[in-house]
Length: 65
Image 1 (cartoon, rainbow, N blue to C red):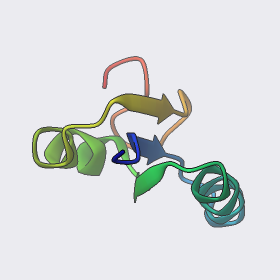
Image 2: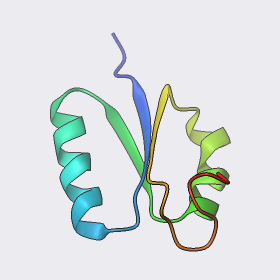
Image 3: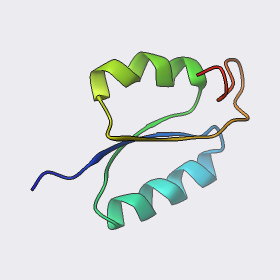
């Protein structure tokens, strides 16, 4: 069975790295973005099953994304 794809959007590098490690440990295939603009660009190519999105992002915020 293929691991579910997750797009993680978090601007804080320490939080992002911690979440990536834990989510991979739990069996997710994790792609990460640090800004809303990057998340929007990645969304169609990654085609995630789930998006974990911080609402307070620089530039385009999570609500707009």
